[in-house]
Length: 98
Ligand code: HEC
Image (cartoon, rainbow, N blue to C red; front, side, top):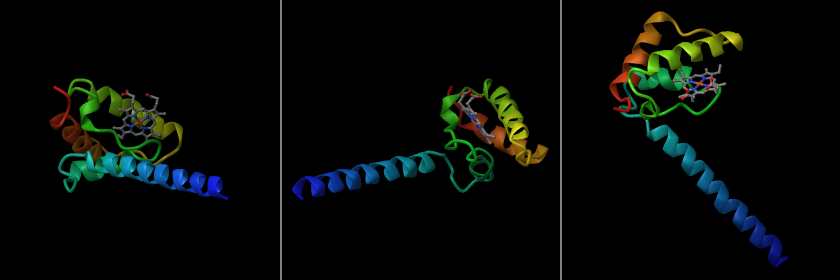
């Protein structure tokens, strides 16, 4: 009985840690209310957690976005429109790794 209780407690605690990590991923987007952050949340969270702009340099981002658009196409997801793609890219470049 005690052992079962311990297992339940461990599950509960690790569950909390997991949801904390998820929240952190969400808050790690700078200027979270900006159009750019909204675009990242909308178009970059269908397949994985939305990435931080810090994972690439401004020079690298265009290629990554191009590849992700192709991934949307492969999955038959609605493609990013040109205006959205530009807002998203400018946002990622603005806060990119230097
Ligand atoms: C249709 C699914 C899908 C969507 C939508 C998507 N991704 Fe991805 N992403 C992937 C897959 C699959 C991988 C792993 C393979 C790869 O790197 O291409 C990945 C990997 C990544 C990586 C890690 C690899 C690297 O090159 O650094 C980054 C960063 C990334 N995605 C950014 C984005 C951004 C930014 C968006 C929004 C514009 C986005 N993703 C939207 C499927 C997707």
